[in-house]
Image (cartoon, rainbow over the protein chains, first blue to last red):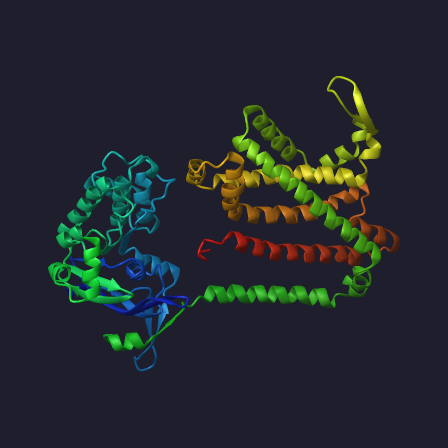
Amino acid sequence: MSDTLLRIRGLRKSFGTHTVLHGIDLAVPRGGVTVLLGPSGSGKSTLLRCINHLERPDAGFVELDGDIIGYRPERAVGGRIRHLRELRDRELARQRARIGMVFQQFNLCPHHTVLENLTEAPTALGLASKKQATATARDLLDRVGLAGREQSYPKQLSGGQQQRVAIARALALHPELLLFDEPTSALDPELVGEVLRVIKDLALGGMSMIVVTHEIGFAREIADTVAFLDGGHVLETGRPEDVLDGAAHERTRAFLEAVL
Amino acid sequence: MSLTDAALLEAKLVPPRRPARWVSGAVTLVLAAMLVHTLLTDHRFQWGVVGQYFTSASVLDGLELTLWLTAATMSAGLALGVLLAYVRLWGSPIPRGFAFGYVWLIRSVPLLVQLLFWYELASLYPRLSIGIPFGPAFAGADTAHLFSGEFAAFVTLTLDVAAFSSEIVRGGILSVDRGQTEAAEALGLGRLRIFRRIVLPQAMPAIVPATGNLLIGTLKSTSLVSVIAVVDLLYSVQLIYNANFQVIPLLLVATLWYVVLTTLLSVGQHYVERHYARGEGGRR
């Protein structure tokens, strides 16, 4: 086992004529927290969505623990790689189950109870029996401070509680990597803390995570690596104190000044 | 054998193999070929006769009636349907109850039965007049005179379209976020204006596909009027084949016209949907 969990190499993505990612290279350490910073439109969310193949990249690849995400290398005679063949839906679903994702708008199923939101995927993918999934779900709800809310519907919960349910839902598949897409941007300021606390607990527990956030203070606190994106390029990566306090690029410094 | 990054970066990204798609595609093509083959080679279809009557004057007259009946009932029915939906959602209790009862009644009775009722209305009410309820009448007309076959057909289909479209419109309106109404109310807009300018346009993406369905259904339902001797597309070909006994080719004439019209309507629906999807950033 290498200590790099996720590698992104040469990742490109355009929407029509608009190029969002211009060849991204990034390595995410096992058990570490990588925070993606950057102005809106810099490609952070698209990058995150390419990692679990919600967006199909135009070129480049994402490798999770030695497996190419979304593709299978096919070889020509002689062992040379001929092309990368996109996986079929079922194989892709199995791969995605290894990567949890938490969205800005939570995206919980409004017609399912909290418990059903957590047990749906593990049982559907055949990873757990209904009973096991329920037991796991109760543990996870306890961990995010929502024990006793199993039978509530998402709309009956506050935004902070909904986002904690969404985190528990992502954890229910025991992912190797968790992706957070601006998890606190849709929350009232007073509810941000409870969600950040849960994420921090996960970080302390050794969960590998990639977090897109505008909470610079939080980034400084939990990040092992900070990557700054602008215009579809990674401008700089490094330890939080290096990037946040001693940014090499003028663009990074301007951004940090604007948000702090 | 390890994969080098250089080799991976050079590899072309290709779509997945989908053998099931190829098989189902091939089966479909064979079935389609069989259909085309029988259509073209079986002499009993008598394409010559079809061609002869396809644009004959009496068929075109029938077609014209089918078209205006569809257009008239759809426009009148949709207007009524929107009104009914508005009443059911925002009306006061008695109109609301009436709207509910109306939809219930119309949906409960088969279209053909309704058509016969309106056509036979004269046996129930020989004379219709306008006046004070339970009081004197100012003017009146013989029902049998008023309710010709064509008028009975128009009334029946309009009332039917109104009932079904009101449910379509109501469903569409319910799909619009309540916040839109609140924001418009906060801007001081009136209720009717909110309905017309804010809610209804946003409900359109949900309303249009179902309405397209209803329109095509209505187009075909007009063929029911042949039972009360209204000379629509179907009845016009029936008149011909009752005389010359060329049943299949003449039914094909009607069928082809219905298919042509339905195709045109489907194309139209596509453009209407595209119009109402504006502002969605091409996401659908």
